[in-house]
Structures are given as C-alpha cells and as structure tokens.
Image (tube, rainbow, N blue to C red; front, side, top):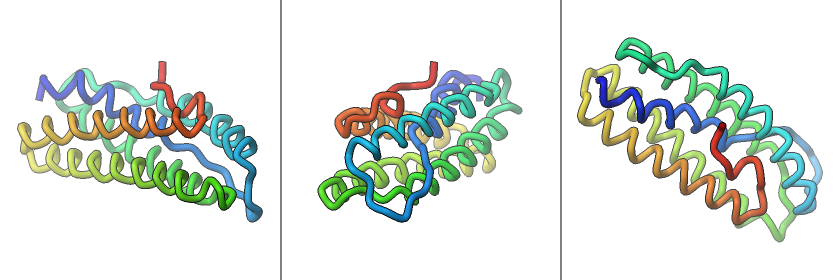
Length: 150
C-alpha cells in the first residue's frame, strides 16, 4: 500500500479535468471554453481541498473524494451544449473524462478488495488517462482544465 500513496496524490487530480455548468442553448466555442475554464477553476479548488493520502488507511477516502468530484463535474460538463462545430470534439473530451473516472473506480474497488498490485496498476493507468484528457482539453483550447492542480 505504501507504493500507492504517491500515485494517489496524482489520482486526486482526476476531478480537475472535469468542469460544468448548464445551458439550454448552444454555446459558441469561445463561450464554451470560457464557461469550462471558469468552472474548472472551481474544480481545481475542490480537488486541492482533498487531503492527499499519507498512510494506507487514507487511500480509500482519497479515491472516494476524487470520484465524487469527478462524477459531479462530469455531470455538469455534460450539461453544457457545444455548437454543432464543436460537438464531436467535445464528445471526445467527455469520453476521455469518463474513462478516467471508470479507471479510478476500478482502482478504488481493487483497494477495497485489498488487491494491492491490481490497484497500483489501475492507478497508473488512471493517471495516464487523466494526463491524456488534460492534453485533449488543451487541444480544445481549454487553459485551466488542461493543467494539473497546483
């Protein structure tokens, strides 16, 4: 479990890729980016409040907090309505964020089952997925959402 601790600090950043808000009308690219980055700023604040695990007993609560933040933010992100021109790329972003959340959930379940090696591997894959989602967000034009919390 000790080797999980440094990786878990990174996994708590999963939620920082999410952001949200809602709108019933389609947003221009500029408006979508602005709303997303404003909300991502709030998501970074929420993630920064999650206490990084310092011992094995802290791992599960940290993963649970990361999942709660990520799922909430992804739900809010899905409520944003991109323009037709942005719809496909935006769907790609949602897919990447959902994958990171799913991997984090699997890692959490492995921790619960005391499957340490499996949890370590899943955490590493989730971290990689999160990095890819951030890179994709940067390519979409998102400034805050493309950067790790820090």
